[in-house]
Amino acid sequence: MRKIYLHKRFDSFLLSDPHTDEKIQSLIEETSKYINSLEEYNSEVKNLAPEKVQEYGIKEIDIKDFQDNLDDAKKNAKTFAKQEPDKDETVDPWFISRYPYPVCSKFIRHDSAVEVISTKKKYLNEDDIVSMEEVGAFNPWDDYRPGNYYIITYKNINDTEQGKKMLKDYHEEKDAKIKRQQRLQKLSSELNDFVHQYKESKNYSPEKEFKEKYEDKLAKAEKIYERSGYMTVLRDYLAVNGNLLFIADYNGLDGDNWSVNNDANYCVWVAKLNDEQLDKVKKLSRELTKLENDN
Image (tube, rainbow, N blue to C red; front, side, top):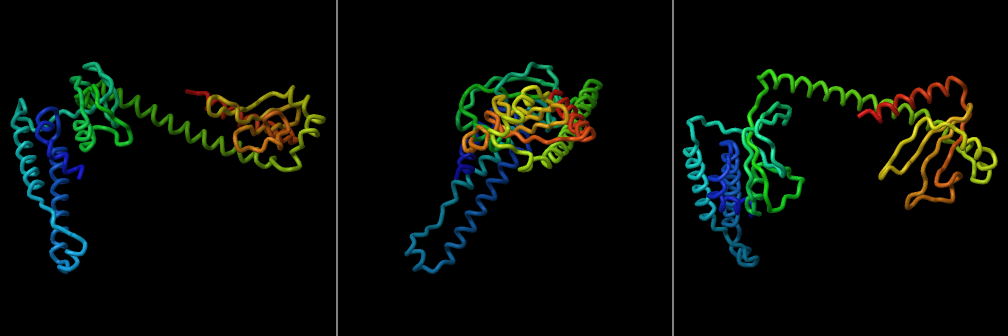
């Protein structure tokens, strides 16, 4: 019933802020579909056996008010169109923002270069917010509360010299980010596959044995790769000392079995590598670290 309730307050909403004919028409079409559904329901009720209607208390729904609201909405849409300052049927696109945008400011919106025409502050109550959600002015996954917002009206400047440059820079940056992400995923997968082959029981030593054999060597080892997790807590790292590769996984979160730790809060595997293997893991680690730190 929420969408029908929307049309009961169509009057003030349509005549107040900028809209496009497409959005108004979409609301009207949506209401028409709802009325058609109600008519189908009433038709099915009429076809039920009288004893079933009486037994379950089924009643037809009076849709006259809904039809009247639809007629009013169509009239309001026509009235709104007549109030436009010029005869151009197009309306400048707009969106709702929590923050003001300076007039003449330029930015990329929906893969287009745009320039702000006007910024109008407006208090939106619950009804206004529901109405604007229905026409797509708000992101459906965000939580909007009554308060002051800004109606940002803008124009497309794709065909201007500045707009073309903005789009060129935007797409170059977008392409670079995509390539960087693809390279990150490839390197991360390669390093993970390389390291995983050494995570075997024969490369893992219990705490006492590990401290006797490797504690001093790990303390002097060079970290070649480390990854940070939530709140910058170090989750795992790789370190090298001579031809020894130390593979450390953090094991100190809730649910982890601390008894298997062999170095403080870490489970550490130790693998002996040849020169070619060491060069490969170092090269992968350097490039991956550089990409991860490159903003």
